[in-house]
Length: 138
Image 1 (spheres, rainbow, N blue to C red):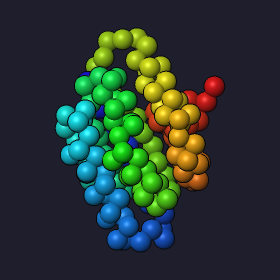
Image 2 (tube, helix red, strand yellow; image 1 turned 180 degrees about the vertical axis):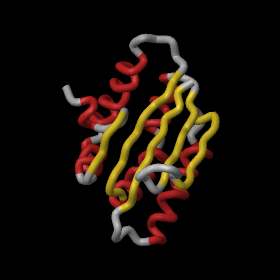
Image 3 (tube, rainbow, N blue to C red; image 1 turned 45 degrees about the vertical axis):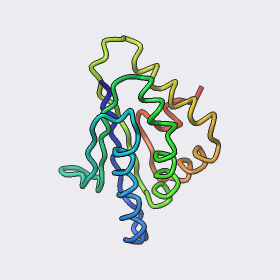
């Protein structure tokens, strides 16, 4: 299993109605992406971030399906412009010693296939972790 987690803080000028729409879009990802077996979206407690989401995905094929799903891309489109700081990470019990490299390859491929997404994330004040473009630059 792969537990894909994102944590974020919002820009101070992010309108409340657009924030609510983006949070609902995060929840919608969990409901409609077939490879997501369970999920949680809510307030991030005990740290510097405001919101967080975790999606449980069975394997790398499911991870790719999650990354490429239109519901995920929709959240990127409406949520990233509201975001100041974003971090992602993955926790997995997959015994493959190359699992981190394989996850990185999926993210790298996604950015290569979607220059508009790369532009969206390049506008963030801070973006780090398993899904950031910098983590996957050649």
